[in-house]
Length: 124
Image (cartoon, rainbow, N blue to C red; front, side, top):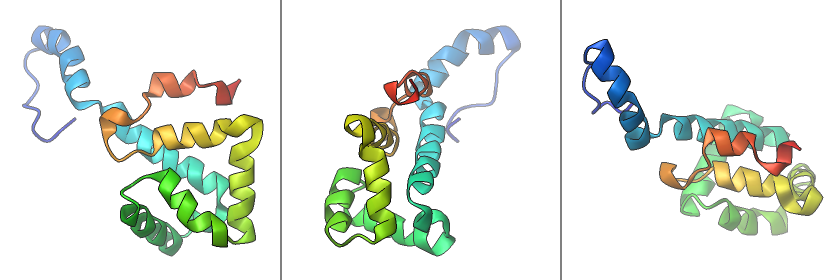
């Protein structure tokens, strides 16, 4: 939960308020971003080192945290490893890429929820 969330009240009050606090803070969306980065590393093995992930984060920041812009920037001069990752994510009409871009968004409210991610057609 957010650091601004007050200490937990009594159990009955906490039970009543927990859905409200969940909707206010969307803690699952933080986890979705993290899972999205792991998904990204699964598709692009070269991003599995600390230095490569730091470089990726810098590139993503320069692209205003937009994966589509990042892709358009790096794909024309991509290494074979990156090309293979894009090809994998583009299978089945780009369903993997669509899931990835819905997970890795800068604003938490724009990210896919955990429930929606698990129901995504990618997993069919």
